[in-house]
Length: 620
Image: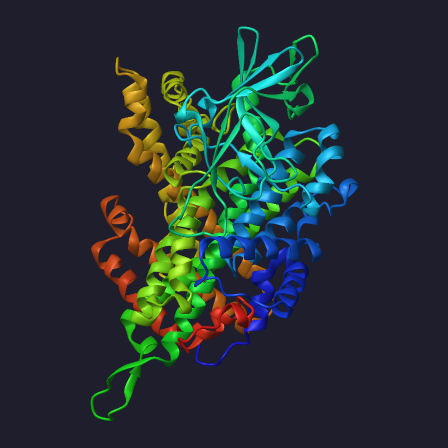
């Protein structure tokens, strides 16, 4: 593939279903002034981000994801794409926008009913009502079901309390400085009965910015990154809110104290409520992808102009990207970024379809939750690793704040643990596969995992998985690629099911059985996501109408596949899927593909079409 390829057809494929929206957003980003934030102190950075948030309002940014009846545009997928595009700039702005309109506004829209929509949504969209999403507690992050903040119904209203310091709301965006109202997740108590976690609208500041009576607010202080976001802590002491403060789509309390819900099971109701908030997880995966693309673009551009060491014989210094070691640093990561981008596009489309209907299909909702969990985990781990690689690829200059990579490293690091800890999320993926997405599959508590083993739900897995025969290997044969990924996924999942079933048939403690297999569980989740990502890449290639661009994408996909096989070749060797000779050929072919794609590296990053002002560094 010696001839140069026009990046524009690649951009068209990358832009996908929401291509027109992406083009409009790029034009808006290009015409706006980018303010550097790397040398601002914390308060100045927060003030700048708040000012930029209002500029987003003026540009109509927050309208996309809200219902037309309240001034929105009713485009769920478009709202996520818009969030992703913010990931090319200051990630503090992206996160703060996500808190205001994705988490806070999204909770009101998806967990509330018409009375909440009518009262709050217009002011949330316009930023007249800045708010918080107060879920995480100091003592409970991933285990949301066992939060300890309480909301007790008494005398026609709810009284919200923080029983101790472990139950304080922690790391809450918008809480330290700007938020006036919080969606507070608390255990709903009526009489002597507890009905599980529900969401309540709780004022935390008055119009003058003073804490409301019974509300204590504390700043989380400096963080490793994202210091333009005012994260804070919240305590509640006898804070009384009206009965209507309960976001009551899935559960309500009548004036006489009768609890009602369209979902009888407390557990199923809880996970249905959490599932409605999956948009935040999808958004984080997309934002991480944008930040990764930015880091790779900076590093590839640097590698095309930076020279080190003379070539023997002619005295000319060698461009960094001509070294195979440097190609191996950047090009497999670039191929994976392409693959994850296409998987993200499919995920956004799935979210849009599921949440655009009046009532989502329950199985489709569970599959969406599982895929969102897995893509978020893999995309954010990829971001953390790739931003670090890009920083190293730029040497000491990459360590200077003015060259953006240190800020990207600091700001993206937390993505692996917010909106779900990645290790927990991959377990969710595997559990969905084991249970065939049955009720409460998202419950990862010890009791639920014990029941999973005890009920031997994984027996159905073995019935669903056919015996497979791999096609003959040919390193560039897409049928071999897809067959190999499918075989790995099914073999790992079937092995896990057999392992759990065999252990459960004895007198072993069910939780210990599941816990002892946790490494296997995580591997099953990762193998499933790898296969979905490959499927998405293959589908995207089929949409490309430009022959040279399609040929280039095909080679990029080859590199994604073979570098993934190379990274896990121990498994493939142990399980007889590769011979030692073929494993060596895989390594050699990754080298060959890196050399083949080296002349197209700049084209591949230019195809991301990141506005130039977001790439301005001293790196060249």
